[in-house]
Image (cartoon, rainbow, N blue to C red; front, side, top):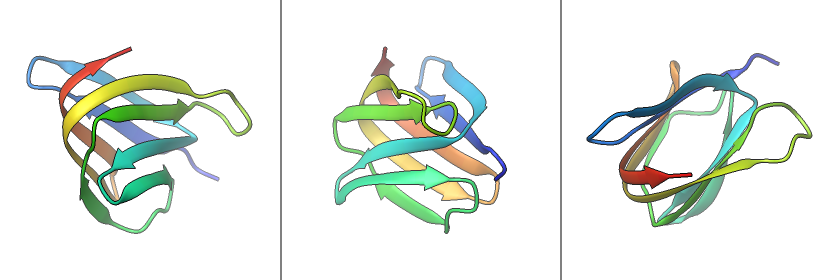
Length: 86
């Protein structure tokens, strides 16, 4: 399966831009995992951890985010967060 292009952006900087296997996003309606080929969706973020899986079966890397939005489209997953650390 192809990789998912993932970008995490705050007002101050581009935190992450890379191809990954899967990302779990803390949406206000619940967490969801995005992989390549995911249906288009947009959600408001709740404060929590974005979990980045670089490869299938790998341990996730957590990045704490607060506020913002996430959008999945044909280009990949973009997370626009008010702040991010980790």
